[in-house]
Length: 62
Image: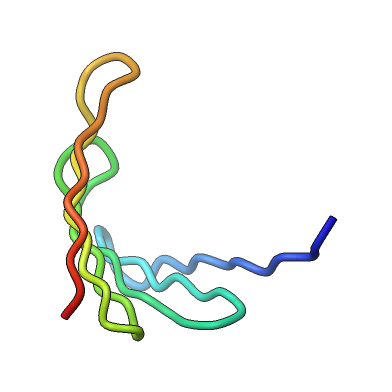
């Protein structure tokens, strides 16, 4: 089983800095609403949690 590294820091209310072994990203938005993520590799993701086990996600390359 490979070892992984992932750490998330809360910078401000609604803003998180996520760090893993290969890149970092900034996430803005609330946990229960829409949130946007921009990665150092150029990936942009918009996600929304919906009631129950449902969710929506759109990912694009910058």
